[in-house]
Length: 238
Image 1 (cartoon, rainbow, N blue to C red):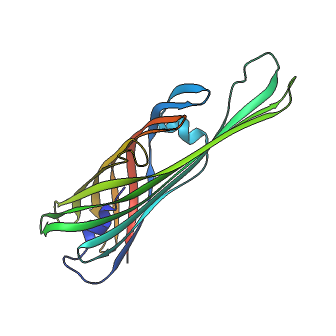
Image 2: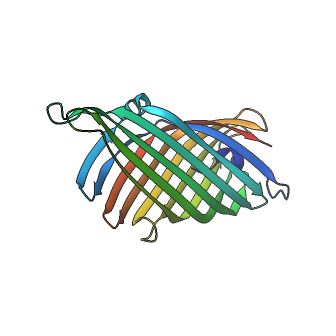
């Protein structure tokens, strides 16, 4: 995600540094398919399913802006844990599955055109992903067993952002990027659109939708992942 508030509130052609911090909540569902050395499986879950198994999460972004240049960083971390059904008649006493995932992006943007109605920015950067899963089976007839797997990669991305100022307080922001190109994942894209409301010169709130797609295929690991849903957040500029 790229910060809408910083672009909305930034003084035109200012040479002073401006910084924006924006915690947010993404009510994302997810679906896709994961294939590993021992076979594959499809999955689908809405936000309620994910929230019910969440142990820890953090989502936030920051932007540093000077003149026509912006540097964006976005971080998202999820730690999910839930019980799992165990096949067999008493072979194991139960089980649990834990999944950790993290995303970190660093994107540079340059304002190619700006006026009273809004602005358009182009740029690029890198988005990294890390996934770690662990399955624990409690002892029953058989002794306890633990299986785990971890993978990580980084994708180069090409980005664009546009802001349309509706009036002194309201604006629309659209952001999109594509990447991977076989260097990290095979292909990835991201898009979001928000309606932004400026409360003061240094504070604003935003609401909209965000989507991410990942197609990763390396070695014996194949991940096809779709995430999408409403997003809300607040921003403080200083």
